[in-house]
Image 1: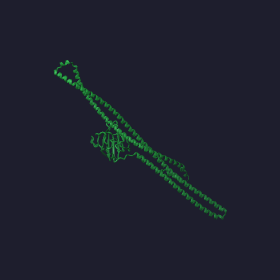
Image 2: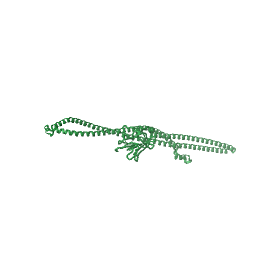
Image 3: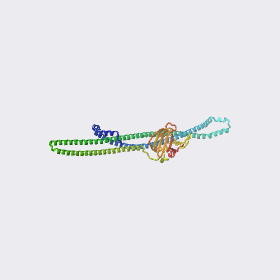
Image 4: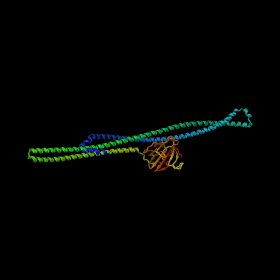
Length: 483
């Protein structure tokens, strides 16, 4: 229980001081009124704190739903990226087919042009001119037979050429449709990215508002409980001092009254008769004894009253201390609940996810673990070629240990898992996670670059600081990767 060690001794010194100094003590009625006000405020603050805890639980549930939506949105974004890559690959195949068909059409067109030109020249010559040809009649007949046989072949080639032209038109129509599908898929992917951004902003604002409101409520409870405790202690001591002064004043008045009565009786006895002096003296002595006895009785009564007041004050102080301790425990419990809601995790061990973890990003594996690069350095992780602006997710549950630029890596994200495992992700253009944040498997953590020609995501898995091959831990993708 926290006490105001600087203010309380000054108040007690002012109360216990005698004479004029006592008149400077705080007004008990004002302090008591202030205590009641503080107790009412404390009750209202407790009710507000309960309402804040209820809201915190509701916001925690909403944050859980938002986290689930973010995971679903990230999965949808990655699926759209994969579909877009397949559509673009098909578009390249169609363009290649269009080029082949175009080359075939040009080659056949040249062949047909030569044959048709020869036929056209032959058709222009009159029949009589054939007699003047510098060749034998047999050669002329043979040429006519060959030309007659070539005409059906030319007609079939013309039909084949028409079929090739029709196929070329269909290929070009397929290219147009493929471009439309690519545009539609790209628009849907952009929508998924925007929805992820909105979810992230909403999650951050909810967390900030919850923490600020909870901290403010806890601070108000601590301040009110401390001030109420100090006022109760002061009022108790003021009440004890008042009762002690009243008992001393009553004893003094009674003693003065007894002395005056004894003096009057002595004077009366002296005036009445000298003979009655001894009797008056004895009566005065008896009166003095009675007065002494009464004084002792009054002193005992005053002591008993003071003792009862002290016990009552101790009881009140104990009750106040118990109430303050209970309020402190409630505040501490609420703080633990809020802290637990911020750092709650699934509790799954990392080894349970072997072979079932999703790839952090969709793409093609360029470099595998253990391969030697051009300068003779052995790779400690994977390099995945992704799409521009591809979504990056957490492969497993964990907590963000580092997020920011790091020499040689660019933007680096380190996720701490259980059993001594860490995941390192580098090459992103934007990181959407903060240090200390709890992550679940599939939750979005960043975006790849939009302006790079070939975005590359570096993935490294370590256990107790030593790199291990991440591929056995990752689940197989829809399309077989190559490297």
